[in-house]
Length: 206
Image 1 (tube, rainbow, N blue to C red):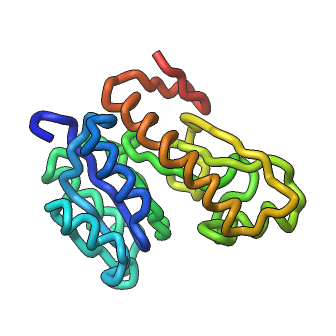
Image 2 (cartoon, rainbow, N blue to C red):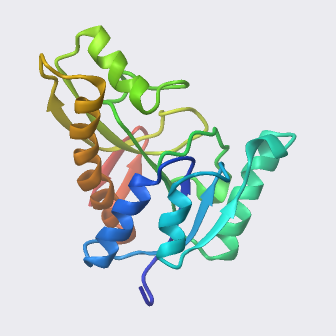
């Protein structure tokens, strides 16, 4: 999208969040230009979505770096080179340090209502299985800014669904992902239009 704010998307697996963003951009529901997709996994299925959309891809494997700082630099230097305004995590499973110039410019979506069922080791099906095992009656998704800790940065938006008696991890995951598909693009749209203001732990829409 010509002259639209540039973003990068970080992935590790299926790329369903990336695919949703590509579709939303195509429908002109999100005013951004995905300039770069970075994957921590060279076999990530999501790389195919990027290639089909003509988006540049880059592989940055955690194991090839000897320090957290080196891994972080390998991710954010290409973002700087592309003049990326926002980095969007879409199922990115590696911990990465946020450099000072990208604080407040990295976003993630997590498939639970943070601070419940989040943190290291809580991703994908594991989250929904934990929700069911605990007996929670409500779950959902959380869009948040990313800091140097897992699922910890200031919360932008949360949306919820009821947990049904007959739910499996798969059926609950499907309903939560449907929420993500709307909440995440909406948060990105607010960001690129300058409407999100971080005030300590709170994010205000202005």
